[in-house]
Length: 67
Image (cartoon, rainbow, N blue to C red; front, side, top):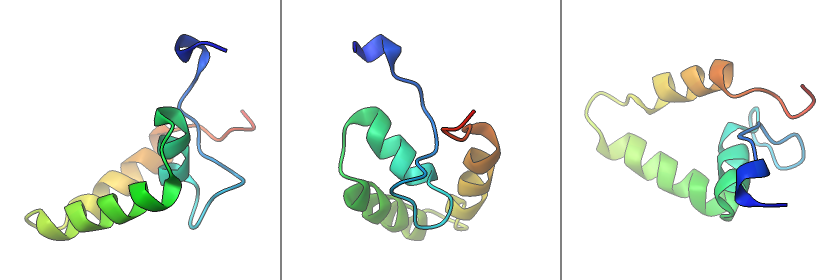
């Protein structure tokens, strides 16, 4: 499987809420825990906490892996 065959999908196996960040971690070949920690830190450090809005947007944009 080449890098071009991979698709960004929510992870049903490694999810905490709905699997968005685990899917991003799988897509980039990273550890899901590190992606979650980085996301929380970046969300807290950004002005106005847009991280929650971005997460909700990704929830609707990133398809489930069963699709």
